[in-house]
Image (cartoon, rainbow, N blue to C red):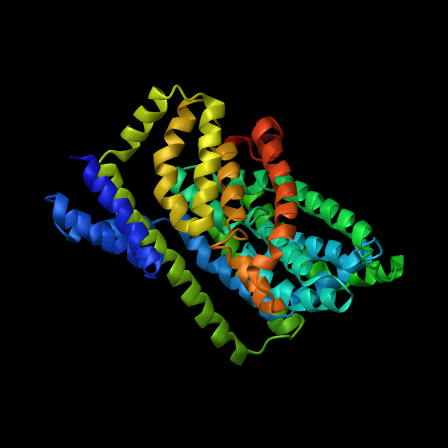
Length: 432
């Protein structure tokens, strides 16, 4: 009988989502229904558990990182990064594609948001690539796939949520994301190079050392921002949340007083947009908190553990299970509720098998980041297609090729945990 409420809980969530109800409301409605029908718990428990879901100091970093990213995006910071990337890789065959990837790598260290990356970088580079003879499909694919670097390169919003849910160290996760982020960028640039050779994509004009130094000087204050964030976390001078506040103050000074690309009047819509985005994310987390509480009440994690034990699932079997689970979740829902609902269920068994929580977190975060470009959810892919004016299904061929490069990076992360944990153990050993 206990399995029936669990079935209703999940079926209700999925059914309401298919009917078009936003995910946060689907989580809330299915939780309330199951609590009223199958438990004696008072209804106020829902409110309490929703509050508990967002009552975390770590999560307060989310609105500040979002605001810093929006300020930088609106302050035309992308133009500086594009100019800098152009001096470094523009002369290679398929230069604009390489610039696209490198800018996303740099922008990811500023915004921590894949959506902000796609919107900011894509609105400039997708039309530019198409004008130079790149296909719409490839232009959108490169932009969408490289934007997931913002979810891996620190600061990463989904790493903050994973840390809040699993108890892993934000500091260790941030540092652990550096090497996989660089590997992802290199693999995407390799695919871009093969495409450029095959379709004879053009090179950009080779820039001189003087051009590079000039672009570096203009971008230097932007590039300092990720160093401030990571440096503050590494030295212990501030927590991840405090570093997010520092990032906001720094962004305001840079855009208002140094570059003067924003005016005080323009800040109001940026604040409003950030508040809306934050409210959406936190409401999803709150709904997932209530949903997760009912799963704990019905002992879902015990059933999952018993199932895995009955299947004699070793470490590799468990990892393959996680790959399939979180890849499918990424295709249908945002990373925030996916982490809040399912990490507490599957992570404890992984820790029992000897997996490191930071290593497991990198696997999960990368899989959910891939979900930003895989249909039907694929928000970054949809934004890129909207900018280009192409139907998403017409990008699938190029998308599969680029995702192949991403999967190679995933295999490296899976098979070489010591490589992923090497940098955190070197720089923040007390958090690993």
